[in-house]
Image 1 (cartoon, rainbow over the protein chains, first blue to last red):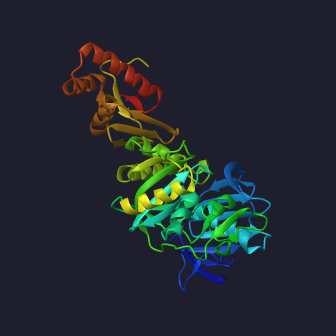
Image 2 (cartoon, helix red, strand yellow):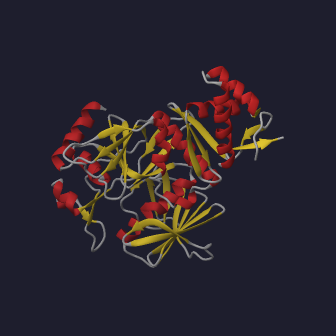
Image 3 (cartoon, rainbow over the protein chains, first blue to last red):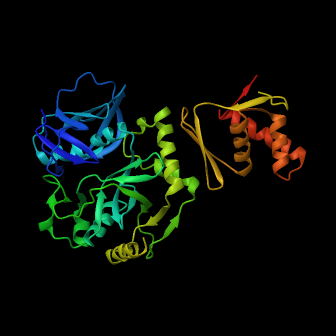
Length: 303
Length: 95
């Protein structure tokens, strides 16, 4: 039985498990049920590059069901886009939340036909701007700098894109949280009173209570591919449209094994739609925090 | 295989393509291979998309109508292009 009702990524969620980061709602119907259960008879697991809290996940798939195994912390099974089973001995709410509101939930979004990117997103003048990049490229720090200047965030870590019947892409808001390293907290001079330690022993912080969050879907306007700083100047260059689909492919946040055959075709065609409608830029991350704020101001005035 | 002017070819199933800017991009999603075709390559691809099955001779005439190129050069380049497309399993010969 679901004890809690929430919304995240546009889904109405009924959950046995407390997920305090999510907005509570009242609803009679749900799109997704999250519950505890024993997961047995998993097909052979394959390694993935999905890394969280020092653990690499393993993955398996079989007709309508996807498994993500984070032994010994938790194992997940996503079924038919509407059920997420959590097999765990964990009782720490922060750890459960960290692992559920992650690629595990991403499996459900994938089953629902959304395009997912490993990145963060903000809303500026009702336009959605996405930042993707390798781990450590500065996605969350960039988004945190925008949030500090009163800009609403749409998601941090996993960006969910819906493409409508007219071929227009929009960003589906995730939930209000930015996860940032201590170094960025200090660089941005964020007050630690506004933040929580992500989990016991972590040097990463969660900014959720006071962060401004966009609740409605927002049209996708621009995508930035962030890379580490190159010298003093922030370099921005626009990709050729034909480079877009392959560039986006490298920021798929879920196991590569999901992109085979018809699923690869589907991902490719959605990426083509995005490349046709949305400018994609490569940007070297601003070299220091003053330059990062200058970029924030530039974006706020030009978009 | 040996390509002659009467060889008929068609695009394989299991691929998806799109024109983005000046390039034609093609994904063979069964094999997971990805290609960018240049202007003439993209033109040949578009002819095959419209006409489904074409002989090498018909393709050559199509190119000569569209581009200013010597017939002998066109013949050799087209043959090389089709050979590589066959090798990459983007097109197949048909009866």
